[in-house]
Amino acid sequence: MQKILNYIDGNLLEPSTGQYLDNINPATAEVYSLCPNSDASDVELAYQAAAAAFPIWSEMPTAKRSKIMMRIAQLIEQNIDELALAESIDQGKPLWLAKNGEIPRAQENFHFFATAIEHFASEAHAMGAHALNYTLRTPIGVVACISPWNLPLYLFTWKIAPALAAGNCVVAKPSEITPMTAFLLSKICIEAGLPKGVLNIVHGLGPSVGSAMVAHPNISVISFTGGTKTGAEIARVAAPMFKKLSLELGGKNPNIIFADCDFEKTVKESVRASFTNQGEICLCGSRIYVERSIYEKFKTAFVSQVQQLVVGDPLLDETKVGAIASKMHFEKVLGYIELAKEEGGTILCGGNAVSPEGRCANGYFIAPTVVEGLGHLCRTNQEEIFGPLVTIQPFDTEAEVLEMANSTSYGLACTIWTENLNKAHRVAAQIKSGIVWINCWLLRDLRTPFGGMKQSGVGREGGWEALRFFTEMKNVCVKF
Ligand code: NAD
Image (cartoon, rainbow, N blue to C red):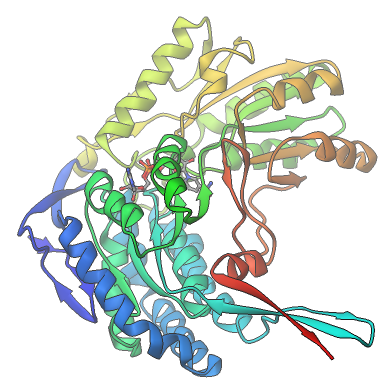
């Protein structure tokens, strides 16, 4: 059985506990590798290595740091087949999705921040001819990056790359549910010549490894992506220590469809926005609001396309919906299907677990599910489900749909479909979410601020925002 190892001080190490967690392939429900069950002593080792590496890495000329990161990007690209296969087996997503979307994006994350840092600058504020302020932005020290299981390498590198580019050393933890590509990244970093201790990856459970990182007295920056409840716990521990926090949390995103949309495109993209990656993307649109005059037409076309999505073996090209990432999450999503029924919803399609023929017969598959007939305030429409379940409901006026769209405690993303630009901008301005897409979904420019309002998070990632987050600011005022 393959053993995943921690990456500490440039070495691949067993956890100090000597204990491992079963790593399960969700498409077959079989244990296929072992993930270190590390604890606070491994976090301490990683911290010591990172602290020792900090003077070398932070003082290294930017161009040289950038070059090492570019080499990591190149190696991700060269190993795309191995990484994509590993991601698909570990997470359950279709192989083609990992190969065309996620792994290229992990490469881009390194490439983007390796080049961005060469253009990053700070400000100066002149006070006439009497004085000058200039702002220094310096690396902070050892920072912690904690990521979830839905887009494993994509989100892991989205944090690590800006942290490293800015000159920090990192102690990172991927999700224990999907540790494999982070392990492969360790090997890539060694091959790329990343100096030892600059990046340290400690595998294990949130309450043991993650919480030790958050509580560590000398790790003053935490970049976290995951559930809102975990984010609240992290904030509770970190706040009295005045740590700098970036929290990218859950979502319950509205997908607003006006009667004057480009109908064919809207249906097709709404299917994608609902069920890509089994609906396990924080940006998926899970509440579909359709203007009443096209509600029946949209519903018929949408459900018909959803029914054509092939659910099954993630390694097959025709598969559009792969396995749910873990048994626990599979049961959670099935529980929400039951809740939707109890709350009076009608299942228009799906609503059941699927057992594909052959090697995936025991895997965690759920048919893409569409529910109608629920009010916008019920639990199904208020709580994050994070799976292949969407609800659909009609609306009559712009004011009504804005009220429904803004009614949850989340505020991550929103999608608006209309050919009327005035309306699109007007609605976008009133939506309470950090990201709004008009006539598209998941179109990403890495320079833009990424993150959520309300309980979807604190702070923004991406572009200069990420580099600002991972640097400390100091204003120097000189009187002439
Ligand atoms: P999670 O909160 O359970 O776990 C995320 C990470 O935190 C894991 O590595 C986990 O081991 C660790 N962790 C758990 N408890 C911890 C603790 N007490 N202290 C420190 N670390 C701890 O989330 P998940 O189930 O892995 O991921 C799904 C969630 O992530 C969903 O809510 C989804 O919306 C969210 N998400 C948000 C974004 C975004 O950008 N806003 C992106 C992807 C996923």
